[in-house]
Each structure stands twice: as C-alpha cells, then as structure tokens.
Amino acid sequence: MSILVVGSVAFDSVKTPFGEAKEVLGGSATYFSVASSYFSPVNLVAVVGEDFTGEHLSVFKEREIDISGLQYSPGKTFRWRGEYGFDLNEAHTLDTCLNVFENFNPQLPAKYSQCKYVFLGNIDPDLQSLVLDQVESPKLVACDTMNFWIASKLESLKKTLARVNLLIINEAEARELAGEPNLVKAAKKILSWGPDSIIIKRGEYGALLFSDSTVFSAPAYPLESVYDPTGAGDSFAGGVMGYLASTDDLSEANVRRAIIHGSLMASYNVEAFSLERLRNLSAADIDSRFQEFKALTHFEVSPTCFTTCK
Amino acid sequence: MSILVVGSVAFDSVKTPFGEAKEVLGGSATYFSVASSYFSPVNLVAVVGEDFTGEHLSVFKEREIDISGLQYSPGKTFRWRGEYGFDLNEAHTLDTCLNVFENFNPQLPAKYSQCKYVFLGNIDPDLQSLVLDQVESPKLVACDTMNFWIASKLESLKKTLARVNLLIINEAEARELAGEPNLVKAAKKILSWGPDSIIIKRGEYGALLFSDSTVFSAPAYPLESVYDPTGAGDSFAGGVMGYLASTDDLSEANVRRAIIHGSLMASYNVEAFSLERLRNLSAADIDSRFQEFKALTHFEVSPTCFTTCK
Image 1 (cartoon, rainbow over the protein chains, first blue to last red):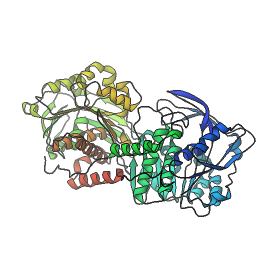
Image 2: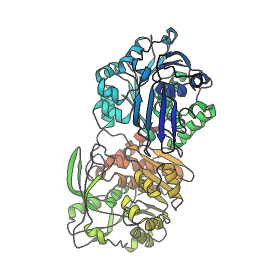
Image 3: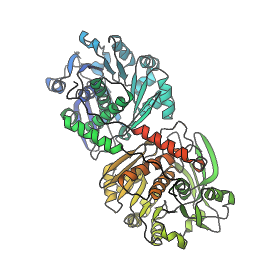
Image 4: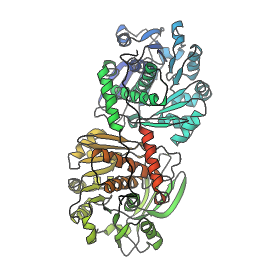
C-alpha cells in the first residue's frame, strides 16, 4: 500500500562529539520517506526554496519517492542548526530559520488522496488537519508532534489527535502533552483523547507501545558507533509505517514487528551524518539487523523453581 | 545452592513525590537478601548498631535468611537520607552517616565459606576482596560498586574486578568506570579487566547484559504506581543471583531468564517504601509477572517483505 507523508525538508547543520556536518539534507519528511521507501511506495508533501538543487532531489529519486507534492517557493529552504553532547538522546537547537516553511500550505496532488497510510510529520497541527481533509478514506493515520505545538497550539493538536489512529512521540513530549510524569498514566490519558495506540520513543532506550489492550517494549540496538542522532525519530516512524503499509496488516503481532523495523531503521540512521547510511541500505542489511533484534531480546520461558530448588 | 551476600544494612529516610518514609529498614544487603530469598538460601554478612531491634530482625527471619554473619557493634546503624524528584531514576543523597559501617570488618562464619554463589554488595573494594579471601571455591562471584569507589579506590576496585565473574552496575557508573560515554565500548573495556559478563542497570529503562559472546536487552516493567525506587538495583541483583543459584545453571539462556527475574523483583520493590512490597510476595506474584515480561517483549519473526510487497 502507498504511504503519504507531510513534513519538513530542511538543511541541517549538526555538531556532535564525533564530527560536524554543514547544510546537509534533513527534515522530518526526508528521513521518514527514505526509511519507509525500503518497504512501500511513498508520496511526499513538503516545501523547499530556490536553493534546493538537483543533487538534493537525487536522494528522493534514487529511493523512487514520489515528489510531485514537493512545492517550490521563492526564498530559502528551512534550516536547522543544532548540537549534541555525549548524551546523544537530546538535541540542543542553536538556530531555526523557517524560511519558506513559515508559509507552508500543504496541497495534495489529486492522486495522493487515495493513500491508505498517512504520516503527519511534526508540523502545525492545523496543517496536519488540513492534510487529513484531503485524504479520502485512510486506513491508518499516524502523527508526530513536538513541545512547541504542545505549548502553543494544544487545542488544535487535540483536534488532530481525535482524527489519528497512532501517535508517535518522544518520551519527554508525551509527559508534557499529558501533564503527567508517569509514562503509563500519560499514555492512558493521551489514548483517551482519540488515538488507538501511542508509541513513545525513548532514544537509545528504545520504544514503548501502549494501546487499550497491550504494552510492548522494544529495545534500541546498542551501537558502538553513533555519529549523529538527527532524524532517528523520523527514521523510526518511517520503518514502522513502511512495514505496516507493505504488509497491510494491523494485527498486534504485526504492529510489534513494525516497531522493531522502526527501531532498526533508526539504528542504521544514526551510524552516519544526514542520510549517508540510511540511503544506502540493502535488503540483507534490514533482514540481518531484524534477526539481531530478535537475538537481543529473546528469552525462553521455563518454569521458575523457587518453590522446589531452595 | 546457597548465596553469600555482603553489604550494608541501613536505616533510610526517603522522600519521593509520592510520600515519605523515615528511618525505615534498607541497605544493599537487606534488599538483595530479601529478593534472593524467594529463590535460594541466603547467608548475610553485614554490621548493625545497638539501635537495631528485634522488629528489624524479623524481616530477615520471616524470609529465613541466615544472619549468623550479622555483626553488632557499639554505636548506631548506618543511616542514609535522600530524595527523588519526578525523575525517579536518580537519587539525590542529602546525608550519609556511616556510623558502625565505617569500621566494618567482614568476618565470615566458618559455615559460609562453602557458598558457591557470592554477591559483593557496594562496599569498599578492599573489603570485597577480603570477603572473597574467606570463600573456598565459589562458582559465581558477582559484585556492585558506586561512583565513590570508582573515584577514590580505582586500583583496589580493579583488583576486585579481576576476581569477579559478573559485574552488576548502574549505567552512569559503567560510563564513569570505563571513562567512556559509549556504553558498548565501556562494557568491552570493563570486560577486559576481568569479569566474564557485565549487567548494566538502567532504572526504568531496564538492563543490558554484555559478555564476549552476547548482548541481551531486558526491559523494566512499565508501572503505573512507583512509590520509592530505593533498593531497586539491589533487588534486581537479588533476583538475578537468587534465580541463578536456585537453578545452578550458568548457560546464556538461563542468565537471560535470571535477568528477567531481577527486573521483576525490582519492579515489585519500587511499588512501596522500604521492604513493604518485596517482603510480601507469593510464588504466584513472581510467576505471573515473569509471564507479563514475556508478553511485554515478545515478537514473532516473519520474513520481511519489502522486496515483494512494494
């Protein structure tokens, strides 16, 4: 099945303890679409400026991502500048220049309206709703958000959440959104606002899935070389949605597998700056890391014996 | 098989966002021995002062813990005072009064020397070595430590580590001990100093096992009601060692099950102040939460389909 993604395409300048990259391709829609493109056809809606070149486009083209929804506006492309300390879980934003993103008005090409799997990347919740208005009968709608929208547009965000099946959100933002430090209670509160499920992203600690009927804990892959966490959350969401769309199976067992695929796409993404690792994966890379995740978490049940062995 | 544990018995005063407890029974050897007593016979070595009463003793007696190695010294019992914010992963120490613990000289009753499973709780690494000198031929020696010993007695600690099979340590302390922010690299470095395995405790994020041949990621149980994290790390270690001693099986598959038992004992411990929950468990409690851990982490492997489904 096809995926529709709306979000940002940006130029990022990133500094980590392991190196630096200047004005490299990034943005939520970029990471999401490249990650999900390994599983399903992807249709992208975003906006870029006049400084967006054929070289940048080639990343989408090589992954066969449909960019007929990519708008060009007069002005410069969205820019983000940030750095990470040794605690790679948290980005410190140094500078954000919205540029053409400030007046982004997402309009879907007619052919996109049939997409069954929709991912509303981290943009203004009113725009997320506007995108949903243009999709005819989606099967699964997922969205992300961030502290900025939680603080400034909570009512709009709640309206979007009421139309969404799956919220994919960072741990700190889940707590902030619910106004509740306990994660289990926070998840329950957010579920009461509309979503059937919530996936809470915890950086190097993995992810938790909550729904009315289940909780699932997925690890992150312990990596010896992490160079740049930028885009990990969107690569994760891309893996989840890509796997779900490719299998078109929303059973709990398959959602769990999808989350592992999200975690593995994120694990590849952080191994290099920008899209350098994520755009160069093979089928064997994905399969082998999925098996590694299985080995990482597997344990066999055997009867406990404290009543007999003591 | 029998377990020998050496560590602290203390009176803790703890404040969390959910309540407060004053001068309640605590200490690393206390939490460890109560947790492990559900699986195996436990022999305790520790020191208390003249203020230690029969009421305190009853906690050990009801769990049938052998306290012939519990020394009484003139003076007061070790006291710790601390608090936790909404981030329950980190204790803020307000006050530490070593009292009789300052001159603790662990001497083992002769019958303890045959114990095959030994846990060296978080005490001076020279004392940890002194205890090991008194054990004849242990099968598995595990130890814990903390930032204070890493900073003040690193060479002594390394001598202890060279005699230890399993190090069980907090995440931040693993990084500090190795002088390395990346956890995979930190674990490898510490393994090169002697231990066959290292278990890194990550609070509400679970635990990681590293050895030369494997990595295992165990979750923590997502709890709606966490009242007091004090003793979670020692309850974890108690569950791990108790399960290993009761099964007397050091295969990798069994070590993984042991870690899940550690995680489940810690999950019960944090549900109440002091030992109030941990001392009142049933066999059914332990079995049912083990099954819940299985449900929490399980996913089935099925072929990825990105080559065919797209």
